Image (tube, rainbow, N blue to C red):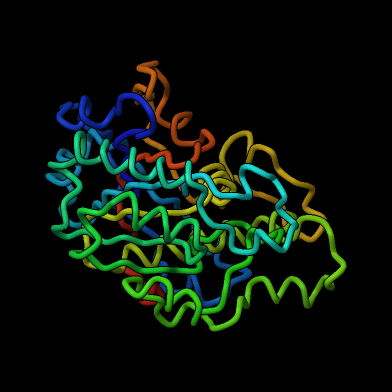
Amino acid sequence: LFLLFSTVKPGQTFFARSLHNNMAPREITNARTSLSSAASNKDDSLETLLEPWQVFPAHQWKTLQQSHGSKVKLIHVVRHAEGYHNVNQEYKSPKNIDARLTDQGFQQCQDLAERVRAELHEVLTPHNTCIVTSPLTRCVQTALHSFPHLIDHVPILAQEAWRETVNYNCDRRRTRQEIAQEFPLVQLGDCIDHEDVLWNSYRDRLGEEWDSHMESAELYRVAQRGMEGLLALQERPESQFVICTHSAFLRCILNWGQEGGVPKLMPQQLDNRQEKQDSKLFHYANDVVVHDSHDEPISFEEFMRRDFENCELRSFCLLVQSQSSSGSSQ
């Protein structure tokens, strides 16, 4: 489900230069393992996913469409803009529960909107497009303020699968009712419970006095959420997605099971699993060189696995897995 176009952040974007590059993707093996039971057992589904999703640079989009048609999804992933928790770094403070954007964060959204209009206006159109966001406020705000040309024309879905690793108060979300009242354009669906079940599940296990990492100390659960989010996306009819999510979450799913593992990995003291090479979510196109925002040549895999800056956008292609009855179309 991933198609790499570029990084969009202050400065030039790779997408405008590379979309029409006629580099052909390497041959893709069509044989796929059925995912019908992939989400049926949440603790075992990473082992069930025997093959990772094939992902490619965005400039191969047209070539991939010619070969695979609707099985190719174009994804624009955005990390949320600057939040108050990013500035004061008081992640545990109750004042940063479900942290909001700063004034600088809103300016970053405006800058991104202008770059999208200038560089992606022929690609990122309302036609056959969907916005998916973490239900945390900073992501919803980023989605609504960075893509104003889409807001009144495409579905905007909040999904729990794309939220940040759950560790501190800044990672908690507000109630479903509060989110719905503030953001009436966002469809919450059945996946958003009234209370923050994910946060509460850790507090129930560890106690209110726990003062260390929670989900980051059990990182396979983050990879599991990423897999479930991808399964849900590939069941939707749209060919193009904007996904607004978080840095630590992206670091996990983009590096999970890859050589070298997940950078900045916290001690997995709550996790009785080992990160395994065969459980990786993505297989990056081999021997492909792209250019980053500073026009420096870099391998596609290295580019994708880098940490995201606030309000940074990267676009890429993902090849849909075999049809799965377990995927949600929420």
